[in-house]
Each structure stands twice: as C-alpha cells, then as structure tokens.
Length: 115
Length: 115
Image (cartoon, rainbow over the protein chains, first blue to last red):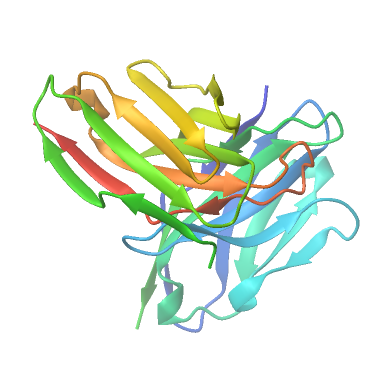
C-alpha cells in the first residue's frame, strides 16, 4: 500500500530564507511523485512532478524537489521565500509501472512567510 | 487554467437533508473525481468516474453517491447529510490516469456545512 507522510503540519520561514518542506513516501513499486500548492479558497495547483529520468525536478515559482529513492523522500525546496509563497502544500504519490489511477495525498504543510 | 467549475461554492444545510454538488468541465477529460478535504487528512477520494455512466468508489464513499450522464458533468449526492460530512469538496479531472504521468486538475471547491 502506498502512503505519504509530510513532516510538519506548519512551517514558518522569514522572507528571503530557504524553504524546505519534507515528504516521505512508501510504495511497493517505483512511484510517481507530485507536489501541489493550494492558495486560500482555491483548488490545488500542480507545482511539479517526478516521473522518470532526472531526480531533481524543477517546477513553477522557483520551487524544486529531489527524488531520493534510498531515503524514500521527495522534499520540496525554494532558495528564497517570498510572501506570495504562503499557502498549503501537498505531496502526493501515484503507483508507477503497473499503472493505476489512485493518487494518495499527504496531510499537507501550511507555509507561513514572515516579513 | 483548466475549465472546471463547481456549484454551489458554499452551502449550509441541515442534518438529514439531501444535497447535490455539481462539477462541470469544458476539457473533455475522461476521468472525473470527487475528493473531500479535512484538516489533518489532506484529500481523500470519495468516488471517481472513468466515463459516462461509469463510476466507482474511492476510500471514503459511505454516505455518498455519484452520477455522470454527460462527459462534462459529475454530480455528488449526499442522500441524507450528516455533520461528519461538513467539509470542503473538490472536483478534479484528468485525461488518462493509466499513464502515471497523468496530471489531475482541480476545481475551486465547495464548502459544505451540515448543521
């Protein structure tokens, strides 16, 4: 069975500081991994995804994530936080190779950015 | 932005009353999904559809039913609403989730309160 764990329900950083949101997954087969962002009163928007190939994935708004199979992790980073990055972030996993449609979401991490 | 609308956007109802939420898409995507979002749980799949009149259950389907009579519309019905169904409901669409690289696009959400 697949599962996703996001470490920290809330993360607070200062504007200009590094953003690091942690995600660990469990999957019996190689996974496809996703990060979504949700701004207040809106739906989820895809930030980036890992499917195959390069393990460092770049997404929108300056975010990137690195797939580390040995650590079963897919942490999201951004070198310098902006006030506009304040939102909730969800990590998600989908089973690869054998197909399947179900996407499992983590509980979410709310990012606060202090001026 | 993917053309997904949800109606109503907000609803307050009383325990025991029926409620129907509507999702409408203009993308002609084959798959449509209903999720609920609750604090600490991320998004959980209620039901999904893989074509007109073709639907199946997700992980939290008890107390919910769905219908899809047209490609563009996916209805979620709470036959007899309970307070535990107070939540934010999101519709999502995707083209072909049998390809793991498939991306889900989300609607803006419906906030439902059951008193």
